[in-house]
Length: 364
Ligand code: ASP
Image (tube, helix red, strand yellow):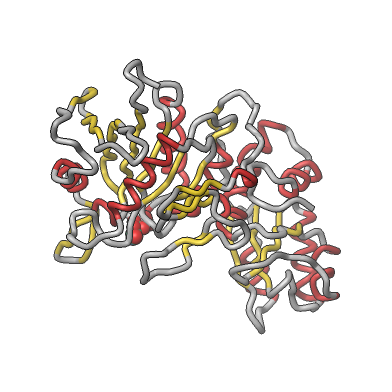
């Protein structure tokens, strides 16, 4: 914390609806739009506190929160700003490196991000930022901040307040009054403002009249030295199983260069008990492909209670328990990215996929 005891955060403005404007072809990120709106919004910028700047980055101070504390934050606006549908793994690396390079200089981080792939980024960062000792909160909105009626103000102010005043040292996602573990979150509503859910874990914090922190959900402190892991495999895909899927389609999916497949199965982890499909999976696993079984259901877990689900485990498909599809993809990308340098055997890779890393799945 700074000498005058105002917690200071770094805000990475990466893009997303929160800073968009409507143009001739629809909503798109607009350079400077978010900063202009912050300057005009008293809660986000107390005009009696002059705007300082750190190089090209403005530093704002909020009005006092209910605790009487203000929050100071510096905004790093990305160039170009991005619709999160355009993100790829190189952007995850940039976000992680920006947090890494500033980790010691700030009390916490807020990442403004589009909602479309926010749950993927939150999952990936949770695995990439090892030994994280500061809060990293992703947020955004479904309506731009500069619109009169918007959800961006609540989400942004809430994220600033939680990062500074209720710091939880992990990667989380704040939306519509709930702080969710980042690698448990999923976007579940494209039309309404309560856009995210963490179907298999209650919110870490609920912000109502009071701020209710669920202490029981806290993760043990990540004791590893702080380190940013940037090795990621781009050769990961996800396939939603459907009635009548053919062995040709499955085999095409599993062709090199694919290294990891998230297999989204029915219900509690069930898959057609057909030898042509199971043979394709067996052969891919024998080549070293990691195949991870998660459920298509928005809630619940893969349990392999049925004969049709056990057949998958028998051919070497890994039980993903209650992982979201987003967290499953990110976890495979991270583990496959690290395997060569680490020299992990196939069995070691499988063991790492099965074990929780940062609270992304429930224990056995
Ligand atoms: N397409 C936008 C994005 O993900 C949607 C949003 O931010 O709500 O960047």
